[in-house]
Amino acid sequence: MKLDGLVSGLKTEELIKALMDVSAIPKTLITNKITDRNSVITNLQSLNKTLQELVDKAKTAAGPSSLAAFTASSSSETVTITAGAKATAFSTAIVVDAVATAHSLVTAAAGATAWGGTYTLVGADGEAVEVTPLGTGPQELATAINASKAGVSATVVPAGTDADGKPLSRIQLTSAETGEAGAFTLQRGTAAEVTAGTATDLGAAPGAALLTQGADARIRLFAGTAAEQTLESASNTISVGEGIDVTVSKVSADPVTVTVTRDVKKQSSTAEAFVKEIAALLVRIDNGSKATIGDVGETTTLGVFTGDSTVRNLRGALAAAVQHPVDGISPSTIGITVSDKGVLSFDAEKFAAALAEDPQGAQELFSAVSARVQDVTSQYSDKYDGLLTKRITGQEDEVKTLKTQVERWDIRLEQRRATLERTYAQLEVQLSKLQSQSSWLTSQLAGLTASDS
Image 1 (tube, one colour):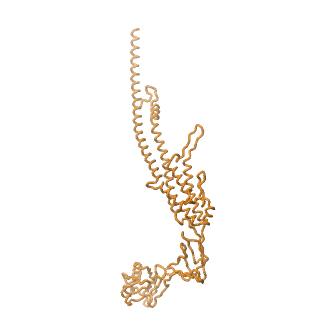
Image 2 (tube, one colour; image 1 turned 90 degrees about the horizontal axis):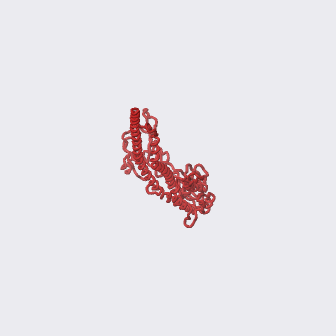
Image 3 (cartoon, rainbow, N blue to C red; image 1 turned 90 degrees about the vertical axis):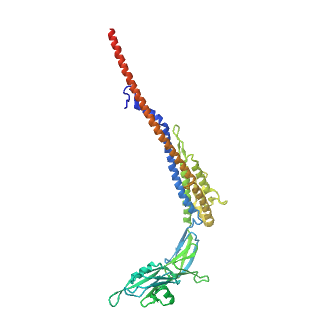
């Protein structure tokens, strides 16, 4: 029952609210601290995620051929050339003498029930695989061949009808791989009968045909010179140098010129993109660590990372990783510089010049710097024991403790409010009693005065 000013005229609810606001000041301070800590945690987690992404990029950049970028060209559409990470500048003429083909044959036509029994597929290496269909039809034999894993695919082909109008079929067989090694024969009979020479070669039977002979691709380098060299491959892709492959699609008696050149622009772009990632991270840390000083009478606003030693140390470690010399050679020689104000920048022209002068040296220096960046980012962002990860965990633990304190304050404040409400309620009751007594005494005195008169 609320007796707000019923007797005393006091604004009891307002008094209690004012007293509770004063009592809740410690809780408000803790709540504000939780909000501040949550903001810090969110920003640290975002920073940590960026670091983890940078770890993977730095690992790639630290590779011995991370800057490898080449432009490959061919003078003919029938020959394509690709250059991998280990390629070098290269140019030569090739003559395509043969392209790789898959071995393929088709059997003679036969009736619907002429395909039963045991068959043997014999590969170019002499390996024999027996195949026994579940029935006597052509589809059962094709299914058995396809399931044999002998490296041969079989397809039933309609072959018209016989003199009686009954359907005839052939089976076309094709090796799964191109090249001479994919050649095979299909023998009617067991492997033992093939060995004994009593099996029947279905590819040599009347009405059968060899469609294509399995053959390797063959090209010549330096054709017409004393250094002429033949290269062969079971596929149509042939390696002509470390990291350099050519793929042929047609025989060509005329020489085809293939060329590989270093793509300096792409190499510079790769390095620049990586350095800019680091530069953006440093700027982000700097902006988050600034303190904005207000005018006279105004408050000073602190950055989310201001005073955070872990973030400050991270910033210093990253800057050191990209600017300290490697074996006495400064990264500035390849265009990676840090100004006196701590701003990281990349000079693409200087980097390109360094690549042109000493490609291997520039690659090694860039890889070494990237490896140091990888070490720093791993040290701070490791999901188990990274320094920044531990910092985040510590902040989260502090927030849990603060939330427990808030819960305790909620209980205290509730008890405090109940006490105040009881106190003021009792005050109104006591004042009401006193008022009643005063009224009674007044009436008694008035009676006495009248009697004396």
